[in-house]
Amino acid sequence: MVKLEDIEKARKEINAFIHETPILVSELLDAQAGREIYLKSEHLQKTGSFKIRGATNAVKRAEREGARFITAASSGNHGQAVAYIAGKLGIPAVIVVPEDANRAKVAAIEAYGGQVEYCGLTSADRIPRAKQLAKEQDGVYIPPYDHPDIIAGQGTVGLEILEQLPDVDVIVVPVGGGGLISGILTAVKAIRPEVKIIGVEPETGNDTFLSLEFGTITAVAGSSSIADGLRTSQPGDLTFPILQQYIDGIVLVSEDEIKHAMQFVIERTKQLIEPSAATGVAAVLAGKAGAQNEKIAVILSGGNIDLMELRHCLPD
Ligand SMILES: *Cc1c(COP(=O)(O)O)cnc(C)c1O
Image (tube, rainbow, N blue to C red; front, top):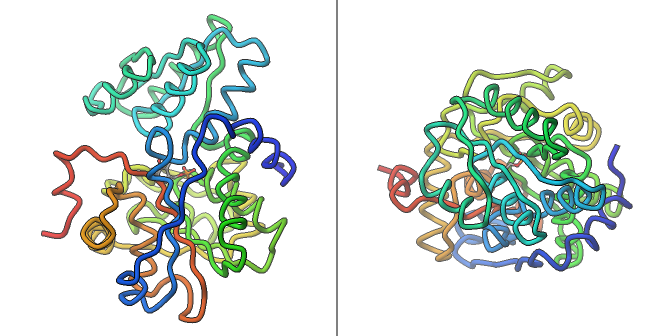
């Protein structure tokens, strides 16, 4: 199990490669939500999402252990993050993406120096291919969330929040496979156990909500939420026990709530975020997370959105 110490080590490891992202505030958001909200701005992170934290921690270890190349299976933020850090470290990376991958995302991977390989349409096609490529030629496959180095890297967000906002009461975190929230739980509950940590999922991708309810990892059928970073079908074998031990609650937001939060953040705070990152704001605007006298940190987890897609992510 990942420990606070692993997260502190990860922080030193990744420090030179990432930004310590700012916390932004908005009087309008506070007024609308009736709460004090602090936006931890990982949409301003290198590669446009927090994924670079875990990816850097994991790729640096692979490099130290003599990996000749790196593979990953994601056209999204994880694939971009792995391609970027491998490029920086001068290690070749092959990123396996679905045949229908968004062209802008593929172009970003290639611009970071990653080599793109197309394979199938689902993660059940891509992941075995990325693992096989790694096995064939002394490479290392880097998973998106269910790995101790990834969890430790993502946990550095928690350390930063505690320093930037020492009297935080609640932290609201979008949940996909649970790498981000399990890292934050591990860091924050070790230092300030009284801080409440609330996860957010889209209603249609409520695998973690159900898994916690049933007390066992439970899969849901392919979510089509606009929050594409949160469509994972089930929590991870490593992440789920951490959630079970520490999480204070998980709330669900509707597609409409996510769209309204997107509009609110873009219009009112002028920050360009992606739908997955809007879910935390959606939860506080709907009054589902945090109480009125509490200081609430909400993680804006990423800002990678294709502008052609943007209007589908806003209210009609
Ligand atoms: C990956 C991702 C998430 C979810 O993170 P997990 O570690 O899978 O829970 C949330 N938001 C964005 C923008 C992401 O890229």
